[in-house]
Image (cartoon, rainbow, N blue to C red; front, top):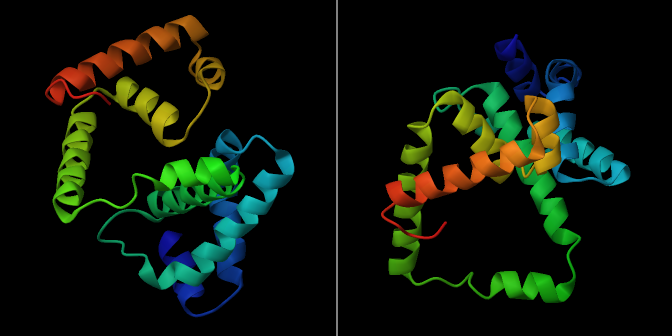
Length: 175
């Protein structure tokens, strides 16, 4: 099904978008609504996701991952972008303060990112799910608890232990 969707999108066939929405619509809405809590913002963002996928379908490389993973990343990034645009100018300025890294700092940042990814990949499935829900999809502790059948306190405890474990694995550096 994914191959058919990509073929149609790349051919400029709008039926590809319809197939994409049918196949991945619930997943995209789930991701976006977890980050953007305003219903109108979330719906506008979902529309932005379909547009981005349409416009950037040529950049999708099946060698690097699945269509589902790519659409997930597009949805998450679109939602985070929208969340950033909603911030006040002062918050945006504060965020940009650390944006001008030296080349050496940039290399160190990339290496830390790779090291974190390797460490997360080595976690068990439940720990990975918890990590990604909280720190990648930005879900609230309450949402994670409800969907994983845990109490909020249990989720907080697991996240605390997970952060400590990651911190130790990364050489004691703060996360």
